Image (tube, rainbow, N blue to C red; front, side, top):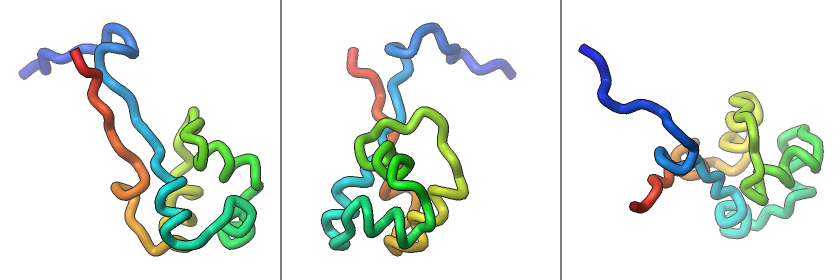
Length: 83
């Protein structure tokens, strides 16, 4: 059975949003402290913090979840395009 949904343009299917900033604020982490705790470069954490991630690195996501004691679905949200 074929799926009737196809990707036409980026605007048609929505986007993935990284909501790390709010969780970090709730847990009392700065970008520097999270970078240190996850053994990740500041620039990488900064991209996640600013919702500027181009390619999802699952190892980084796992480290962030471990340190912040959260799950991926608390960090990553699917936002449908509104008609």
